[in-house]
Amino acid sequence: MVNVQYIRQDFPILGTTVYGHPLVYLDNGATTQKPRQVVEAITNQYYTTNANVHRGVHHLSMVATDMLEQSRETVRQFIHAGSASEIVFTRGTTESINLVASSFCQQEMRGGDEVIISTMEHHSNIVPWQLQAQRKGIVVKVIPITDDGILLMDEYEKLFTPKTKLVSVTHVSNVLGTVNPVSNIIRIAHDHGVPVLIDGAQSVPHMPVDVQVLDADFYCFSGHKVYAPTGIGVLYGKREWLDRLPPYQAGGEMIGTVSFEHTTFNQLPYKFEAGTPNYVGATALAVALDYVNQIGMENIAAYESSLTQYALGQMSQIPGIRIFGPTSPSLTSQVDKDSIDKSQLSIVNCKLHRGSVISFLVGNIHHLDMGTLLDRLGIAVRTGHHCAEPLMHRLGIEGTLRASFGIYNTREEVDALVSGIKRVANMF
Image (cartoon, rainbow, N blue to C red; front, side, top):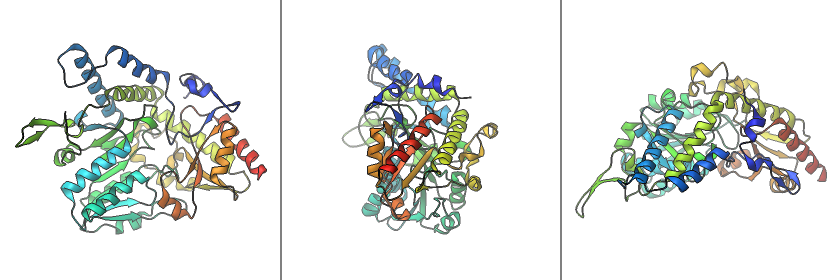
């Protein structure tokens, strides 16, 4: 069970007002708010144990180093990686994808080789591959989708050729909320001898993830979307791949030995962590993961799914509204149940075909106008193309409004959103 009112007490910002109205924060897909425990962990480390890690024999440095490596172990357990050496700290999902794109293309790809992505990708899983296309002449191929935002899996399988070297797709669409069948995506790719990178930015905060059950070769996510600070993220990679790939950046920490004639590189995961890491951010990330673990990821998934279904039901009654992405219960076949621990399937309900994201338009009202006026009512939603312009082109629109939910959101806030949309619509 989830005691939302109890949880909300950990997030002081939720008690603020905006233009005289109680804040209704529904922009969790962009970033989540932070609980007291995470903020206090940051403050405590800077005040009591701040020192550069892996570089000193003095007490503070050794304590800070232990905290960093304990945080790495917390992440390992959270996504069920096989070894802490497979956990690379980055600045977030974007840097993680860029790391793989750069190192993988340098080592494994040449002109004419192919990477497969999907129509619903965030720009951070499109542009890095386009840059590699410009630099190395690789070919970017795209999985098409249905009008309801479901990947066309038959078309996906047809994209493979002997030149296909990597598949890189999102677990959950940040616009449509579609939960992609990534275990099937990975299985098909592996049948062709092709590794897979999964963008977990919108999945890790909302559902249990087991990278070994999925058999993902690479999996990444951002801390700030799972109640941790900005500037910290994770790249998981199978050891055989991380060993095989060259470093992404060069500098301190990622080296073994350096001379003017020759340099050797450090062991995993430090080979990919050049310079002073965000060790305070890593500690805070571990605290955030412990926080959601205490609530229970299966409980979070069930609660947010129920809240999203309630929101879909209430919003669908608004005259002139268009909701994008899967809405029909018949789409439950798209649930990637292999990403969820088998013991939790009885708890996580079948509505997980859609993540806790709802993108919509109302009549001919421009999304920016609607979003601006909702803000005046204290309701924070995202407007625009959500860093997914190719998807917008596929849908034939310029942008949408997006309401995205977190563990602290309530049905009362959904009701406030629906009331606010109706009020704004009446103005037009």
